Image (cartoon, rainbow, N blue to C red; front, side):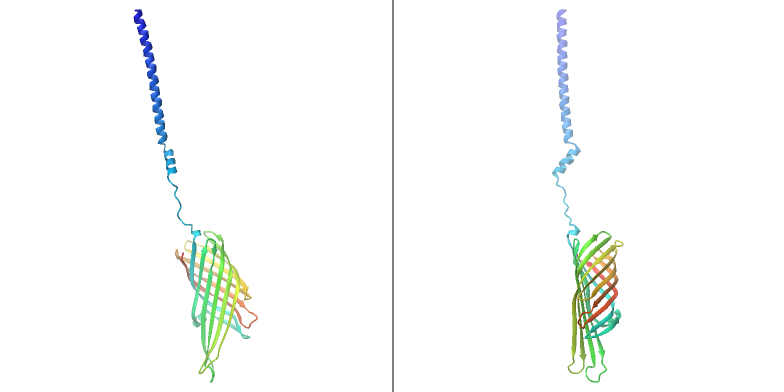
Length: 291
């Protein structure tokens, strides 16, 4: 009985030891499995995966070109249906002049009018050009000598400027400009008749320094209004112009324009040539945005 009791105690102690070892082993196995599971979960974390993808994938680069960093160029052929009023004089004689556009158009032989402007960022270089050749024939009531006289007038105006954009908004743009306006006027009188006949020519050339501004307002996606003007002096006592133009965007690269222009020039030098006139009338044209 005593031997049986000792054996039972030894068996119980062994069972407890084995149970403790088994419990410890299971705990260690579970702990190992938990560590493995946590490591896998951390490796498969969406945030870490996105971070890994971000670190390995290069950031996209903007390959587009900023429109403000390229050159823009526009060309505007136009017609100015202007009448002229004022005083013309030469060789100590002057005459009052009042001619509407219909009168000038009847005497017009050829003409060329246009404007152009290259622009980069806030800087521009607008140029305005006008050239006309007029002529008229008048009969003379002489029995001898020349039977008629032909008068030819050449008029050239060139106005290059430098412009700087003061306001560059989506609805309103304002440019200040400074430049010169060059004038050339030439008058030729040719007597026509039998035999050699006399011919007379006189001209005047001068330059005025001018400064002004241009305002462009966007009334709608397709309609805009432009107001510009300048004033100056130099060769002339006074030289100024104002104009208002309404534009319609036919295409992104083509804008039709119509408006009114007024130009006043008072040229009365110490010489005998006088050109003190005001030209005003309807102006029509189209602007082509080349780039």
